[in-house]
Length: 376
Image (tube, rainbow, N blue to C red; front, side):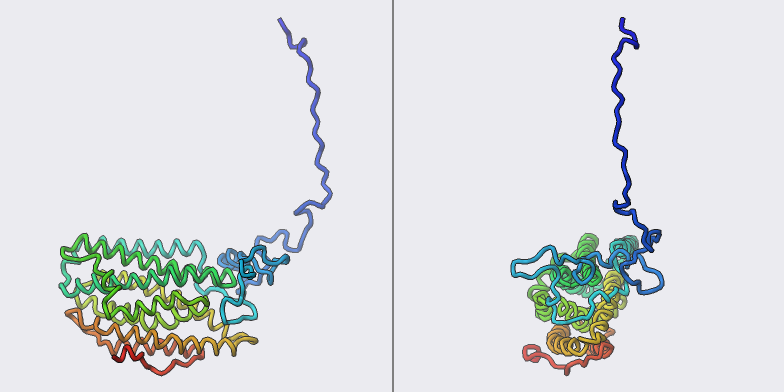
């Protein structure tokens, strides 16, 4: 029998003890060593906001901290986020801060609130059998024209904002444009799901009619052409300007606010305005950051005058396109049974809104003229 005393003893192990030399990271004390706030940027107010903490300098820039230059490039020799991807110039692109303070959390929170509101409204509509109270002319209007608007929203979201947001030179601008794209895509989805919901609960409703309308109805071909031409713009700032400062006030708000929201209730529909109203609220937020960005560029001490000339040129290029699209929508005003709104009044209000937006930026709206094709 082997006892404990008979077992061979193990040699005692030893490990080298760490020697601190004060050369390791974090050894030195700096003025902000005990601070819980970032000090590499100047907050807009006394205290930095969460938005500033999570967006400032997230995207590297050789002009701010990236001393070794861009670490990646493209086949044509350009690298990083070239500032010549737009004709506009800025003394400091990093001066722009989104007045909406959009970042990851706001996307989920705001869109979740909208989806929750829409779902509750649809549940109430089912309980009250609201769709069954619609006139046949209004049901046709919703299936054809309210449904058709989803294509404009989806096209702008996917092929204008999602495509252009990568090209802006700072994370703050990219964030705002990416959220703009998310708004558009969610609104298009809301309209698509709404269309399917009506088809399920209302006999005779054609949930696929909107595709033929978007592709071939003469009243919609101006809007379709306008949207498709916007997707072909290569200058990210021009795409943003032409969409949010020209197309939206002249065409988007004309259809959403001056038509659908004005006449839906008169035709016994209290559901559609909640869907369209959510899209209008999205645009209010998107317009806020767009105006702030272009106002900043126009006030630039070095490049303001040149930027104004470029924006004026863009305004003159895109205003006739959107006015033509707006005027070709006129037949839609005569289709519902109840027509409390006149097309001319709605267009005048849209043009007044558009003129105020341009005037606030110090720009001049071109003369109201339509293309020869529209005149025909």
